[in-house]
Image (cartoon, rainbow, N blue to C red; front, side, top):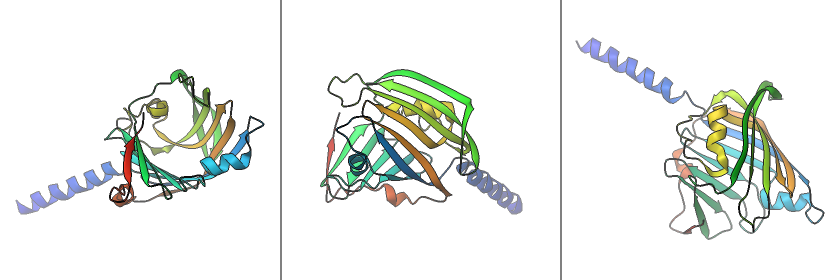
Length: 225
């Protein structure tokens, strides 16, 4: 009897471990290149404000985008907490952490379409794409449209259910189509700039939970619309 119980426990443990590793967890390192579309904006300014490298730290139900920005906030971390439906923007030179809802998007969707025949090779793998275009409804916004093609690698799977309420940037729709992390993002932020963000390293590894901790003892948390 004891042997049977131990066998069932071991089998269940193996099953749960394999299930928990079904979705990608690890780091994705990107290089970002910019092409300004307005005379008054330089490539140097875009790099300063948005960074030219990004590291994504991905768990099944949350992720971080860490960027080497050099603006007023310094190096920034955008922490996406899907179960909370909130994102947190923190900078190493800022005394404030800004939070906003992930389950709200006021922009107007123009197109979402999977393009399995339109591919790019990234890190030796052929990657299909998803087209995602939307326009702002805010008359005061600096940009008017986002026109993007996102190439994804199907072997780095994402949990579609975890992203179901990630309406910010219509990213829930992207994940529903691709079901995997994007490894090459070609986006026109009209009429300001064009960017190409391409992964140069993907490392499947355990991402420590402490990376998602917020420094609430030394910083103010301010919600923005």
